[in-house]
Length: 109
Image 1 (cartoon, rainbow, N blue to C red):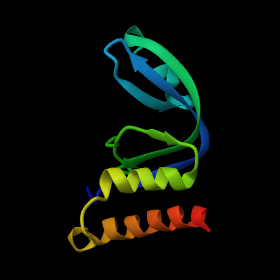
Image 2: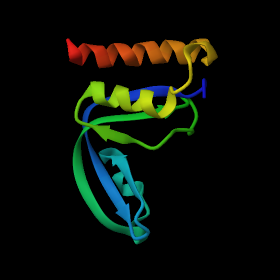
Image 3: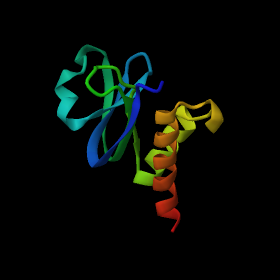
């Protein structure tokens, strides 16, 4: 996972897409036209902070999740992807984890 880095957007518009199969995913407004419309059952506009892991310079990325605050977005990334002890993380993973924790602490202050 160390090649995947956390990304948190500024507050933006996303669209929560639900397919006929019951799957849901969020897409940023600027890529809305790229989705497969044949399978869409419902679409809902959502404002918030997008969060995902991405391999910069590559197309590899996890799905977006959308949150009300930047701190909630950071906490979601920690909960989903940084569940191992610090000693088992690579240097890059540790750095990213610490930076995400700082974002969660800022809201508590």
